[in-house]
Image 1 (tube, rainbow, N blue to C red):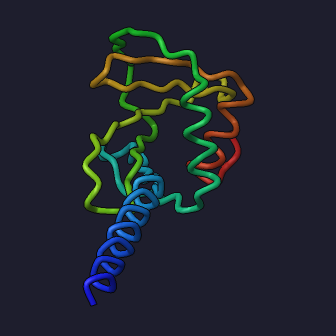
Image 2: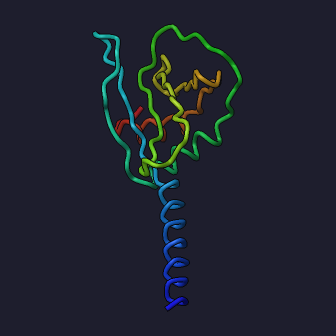
Length: 137
């Protein structure tokens, strides 16, 4: 009986640990779009596909971010955050602001809270924009 209880405790602990680790890795991306007339944002899309979320993470991780406080001429066209599917996960939400370049061939990103800025190349811009908006750049 003693061994059975010990075994159940060990298995329960293992299962709980594994499920928490899985929850940390599972994320959505919440995208908001700027409403030009009202100059505010509204919910636009939620990216739930884990492969697409991973692709966005990869693009952002490979980007050559500059430490710079930028002052853009207008508010961002889109903004997005990563949301953990596990509500118990305590991670700071990072707000990414996205501007479409005047030539409509690149995007610029700002993480205002961290004073970070990057302009992505055409390929990365196109991939990121397609995932976030389901539209071509």
